[in-house]
Amino acid sequence: MKKIGFVGLGIMGKSMTRNLMKAGYELHIYARTKAKVEDVIGEGAVFYDSVGACAAEVDAMISIVGYPADVEEVYFGENGILDSAKPGTYVIDMTTSSPKLAKKIYDAAKEKGLHALDAPVTGGDTGAKNGTLSILVGGDKADYEACHAIFEAMGTNINYEGGPGCGQHTKMANQIMIAGTLSGVCEAMSYAKAQGLDLQTMLDSVATGAAGSKQLDAFGEKIMKGDYAPGFFMKHFIKDMRLAVEEADAQGLDLKILKQVLANYRTLEAEYGDLGTQTLIKFYE
Image (cartoon, rainbow, N blue to C red; front, side, top):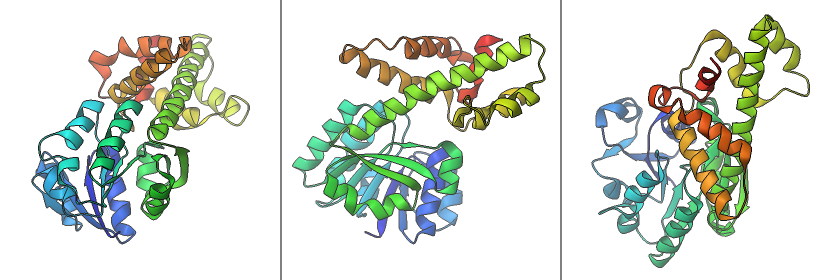
């Protein structure tokens, strides 16, 4: 597989396409607004005016779009990926989306002779730029193995999670962990500030101990400096948490911490949804 299609060239997607090109893949892309991807086109990617036209020309088609509704549109819409891809094509959705939708895509793809994988990622914009993403793959194991080299161009921690939808379920678990951890970071920093502690000294003191975490490393200093630029949009994290609550409720699980963190974020969404997840600190201000 040398021809790779890509739709969803946002904060994550642009870096992922660049890493695929660095690995020697021929990139074919679609975006609603061509002007936003002129830089990637200038670097060698081939642009198409529709997602279907792009999907028809490639060996594997990757999507990483915003919301489950966007996934529905690019896969099941008129002249979408499933209608347009040639039999034998691998279709890989790397959006954090609904596990139920991942199974729906898998079943529809199989009927058309396509190979579908759900492969959401974690690692944020830094992981996308550095090619160090964790990639959580659900679907048939043979398809996972066939696409492993593609994943290696974008990530370093690549795991087969199980059948269709299992990649998405693993991503739900990931987001549940982040919700509690980042909330804890914000509460600790609010407490330290209220007690008059020097925040930098506090962060340096706890970062390498039992309270250390990736969330603290990524966002502690940013929160202290008031840097709310998005590595991952708050509005997208809220979407992920809503999906996780839906899936948990369906299993009879009452995840109280997740629900509380989601409620806290939702009070901020209208004003701060386009900022980064670390903007949760605003809830405590």
